[in-house]
Image (cartoon, rainbow, N blue to C red; front, side, top):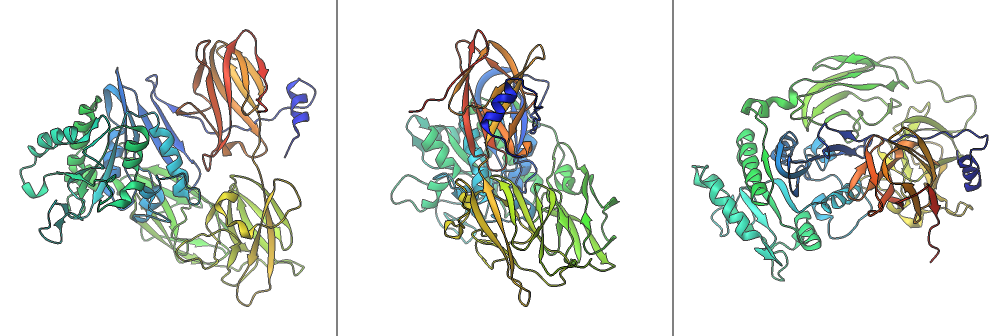
Length: 592
């Protein structure tokens, strides 16, 4: 429901209308002050988990990331193990699995190569939303280490097809030997000597790989779009990539060497950690250990059969997510929609499929055959086509010619047509589900409603200022034509509710660009109120996410900027500045 500003101000003036707030996800905190864990894009197909580990002693913050390309297994296992490390000096910020959908499918990329999306702020695919958060987190870091798994073995001169300058494995990659005051060659060469002394086989030893990214004659111009180049050129911080080789089959050996290289680099960058203990067998077996989901109340096991009725809804529940140290990402795929994870997406079985497959970090661990019985319910008494959709996880039935009202950042899945016995094709005009095969089929995919992601020439005039309207069309061969409209309203934040250390609540009207005076002290953001679901909102302060249980401090000498964002896109909805004063009061936003 939408509310006018006048009505909100009345509510905030404690008149008789009740105030209903919409909560958004909390931030997981450890017992150690300053250490936090947060899952960005929770509830979408592309969750991004970040873990910040504060050291016992002060020092720099180094960000380590793995899994930006889903076919590089060692990188995300190593990064995940680092989330279990103890920081003795300095701080560690770890993004273990940057590209979860590509990990599920074991592919380098889904839509675009995420590691080529850092030369500008793109906004078309989910990869661009994730890259937006990565840039945000990198801003608080003093150095960056990227964990990869490349082909073959890098060698500066050509030896054979596996050992040459176009191979990346067993190397530490830098964009330049030095950049400004950053001496990358010295750091990496020092680590290489220490690391290679522990590797008796010379073929498997690491080499320094300088891509000469900034030079006009570089053989690797694409590296100018990479994350290490962005970190070095935009933030002026040391950045390097540790690449193990896909040509080495022993995953446990690769993880140990990559972890050793990372620990050494961290030490030279001013961060001292104690890595976790693990066995080779644990690395080999973790993906299939202790992993379990249920479908419609029945535990899924390999070779089992599940009975479904056409038109029924799948209820998928994650029962066990595997060993805590490895925390694998689980996915359940139906055979007709292999890219849609049913653990994070609803499904109404309007069309039959043959199998369900459970994957753990991209590895198939169980397959269940589906047995269909019964018939699909009829279409209804009249001839109007009824579209079935999921809007923010709730089923919605839209008749031919109707308008579906949504808010920017909402999640929609076009499920199909109720009562149809055809293989339907449903096209959201202006949206491209598969960029390399734009066949007009948008059914089944999670679509985050952001008009900036759509082709603007397909926008339909809504007659209402600020509303973006797009048409959904049934394009099924041999079926009657039908369509409906989706109206996308801008998301508007109305109010925040803060609580002080005494547990007293403060209702604060949202004033993007403005300021608000608060008594000096510590506060928690309890709730936020907007014209849409609360789980589509998140907040950040400075360079960290702010959950509903996370305290923040307002000081006389240090104003605090709080930014509200779309939880599904990380797009900004405005920033308010909180300043310490005598009594709570509001300062209007500038009109300049």
